[in-house]
Length: 321
Picture 1: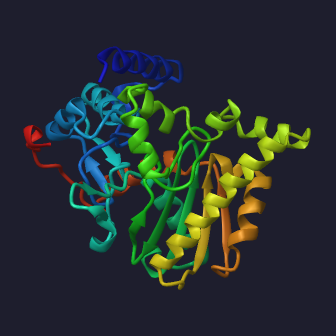
Picture 2: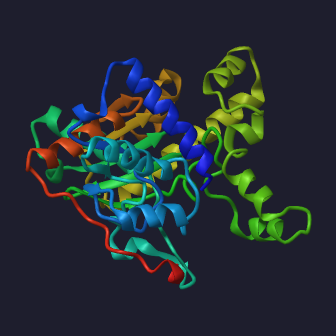
Picture 3: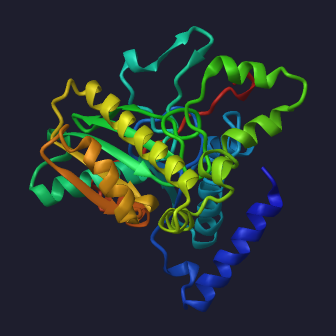
């Protein structure tokens, strides 16, 4: 992790707080996004020394969200209060059967948009007057990466890792033919960084159409661009296909399908996906954008009100990671 990135963002946060008239002394707690930590259960986690050490070492890879806890900790120390993260991307509630990949050398890790997926599922439950744990849901987070999750008994029992599997998206390749990927990695023409960039950053719409902008792609389609239409429909096809696959995790007994994330703002995309999946469940509910900021605040507030206890990470043997 580059310390200059942390310092730069910390300076911006301090400036924004100052301009808004906030002083650190007035905070009850500070909460940030959770990053690529070890597999964790859902909940509100206190930022402690073990978490900070793990994020600096980043044994599971760098990610922008790795900065969240560190930024929250820096502000919280100035205020003399606790820092928290809520439902980090490393939340892993997969069933044991869902963790097997097909080879002993690889376990399905399941990094996903847990914060927003959980928040939207809980919001849907509140709107229905039911408990989240009573519902069986498939949630599709449609953003820069697409994460599709099955929820049963208040747990995400299976997910697609938006960085490694599932549908392609604006900038990620999703699942790709493995044998061809192996040959690409060892063809002598591409180093590791180049291949990783193909899969995350230059994948998906960016790879096929040279843009990550869904609105731009839709404009091209309206202007008669047949290639843009084909790629767009292929992304819709893969999203719907993965939602259908996740419905089998719940044995077809699905109370609702929830569509969320930035791409859910597109009426065209939502309608095309809906046409393919509406038969799966009696309800298809759409929550465009993200519920992440309210979810962060609510998670910290539950701890401050004594409604739940903050979870604590024990030290990790980083040498073994």
